[in-house]
Image (cartoon, rainbow, N blue to C red; front, top):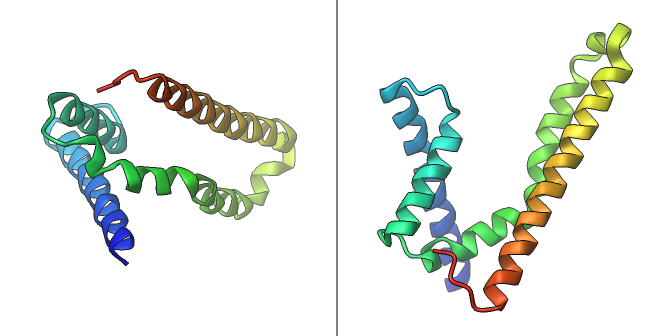
Length: 125
């Protein structure tokens, strides 16, 4: 039960940083998505030591483990626009599938690289 509370708290902290990134984007009228600003903010907080890695590590691991579930709403949203598939359907579907595969492969490669470096004892931040 304690682990569940810890993971939920860490996910809430990550969500709070993401929301804060959205507010920063609006305040400064940045041409970046708020979630990206939140990720940059998290990176800076981790590098500066304001947030310790163990404060977010388990929550982030759970989110990464369930990453595939976050793509389901996108796929359902695409299905709602079947009229787009009429003339350019095959090309659009190819772009979507290629984008999803590229994203999943990129996340996998980066995650495995970071895990390999951590096993070798490198301290990334």
